[in-house]
Image 1: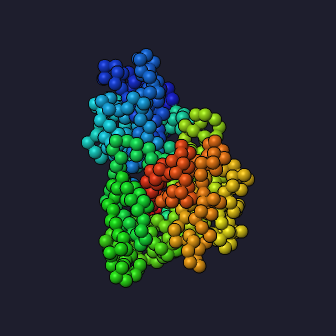
Image 2: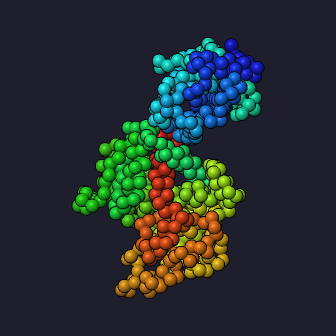
Image 3: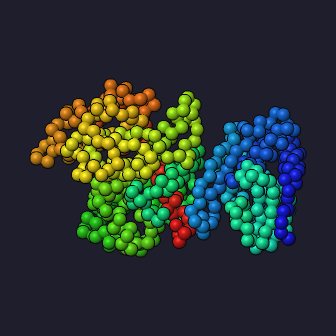
Length: 191
Length: 329
């Protein structure tokens, strides 16, 4: 199966549903903090925060949303050319005793999230950490699961998942290809 | 990048990449837990043939913050004082599995020799070789200037903008003092020029290197003249080395007092700088000689900040040299 898996309206509906699921699970947005993992987790975290703010008027979307770069916590640094380090910008309210929701685009091996958990641990001590992803493509290599999933997509290991977002790529779409497409958008190969 | 030997070797893009990486490294140094696991399992050797406290502890702190193992090797009290050659020292370090060697040597070119000889496999970082180069010092100076001066000129509050991705175009930097013997000056001239800044050297005629005409700089022989002719954004005072001062037939200027009168930075000269200008010094300072206490301790002085920026810049250099896949660098 190749081609478009999620269209722009599909992505929008999935994010709206995840926003409500996050609120339901946590009984509101009192101690909620969203951390997007660069590159494409970050705009997704902002979109989720905006949707949560629409429902919960007390929720400040900009003060509760941050970015968490995990480059320096990766376990595969020595297997790739040197990566550029992205910005980590914690929400102004901090993450101590907060309910942190990590946000990423593609959930694949689980190694990115393992690195993110290590990074969170060095930044503070949240009350709990949850995980929201737009696409879960399977093939986990670590005992890690997502709490909120936009869409489960059964894939073969050789296939590539490309998430394209307006903020970074000019359009909203999730594409599946057999590995030939190389345009720099997220492949989920290391996610 | 495999080695960091000279700022001459750095392209504009490479220099900006180091500064941008240092920006992220500096951000991690404000947290409660400042240690990162990035270079776990790597071994970094500080190989110091010349006395240096601040550069060595700065590299040591940078390596430790990235979880690398650090071995300090100083020539004093080691086999080098028994006559061991640089080659045999390098072979020993190779056998111990050093992933990177930070070398400070009294001979210009020692870092190149170590890097190009094939004696050892790891990366080489030049921490100062003779009167030649001191690249991490120039990088931390550029980092400090960029942080204070880029984006800050548009108006109040603009300095909150991130300088990431920018060079130093539009800045005028004054380097004051002994350019002839200064590796800090040489490293700064080439890096600042690469990054688009204009460099003014302020130095006694006896302490200007031969062939200065070919350097991309302006040269003046008095600090007052420099302050009159140029709008200086960053003024960097170089250390006067005691052994270059008066005494015997080898002196480069008649007296310390005369040097201070013509080239020293005091409060009055400092107030003639533009309002946003910063005062820098690579340290260690001779208070009362090239800089007065009033200037060194003023609000414009970023001398202490240069030290903490040094750790971030060295973390960035170690990360970029050591973290990635070896063949792909």
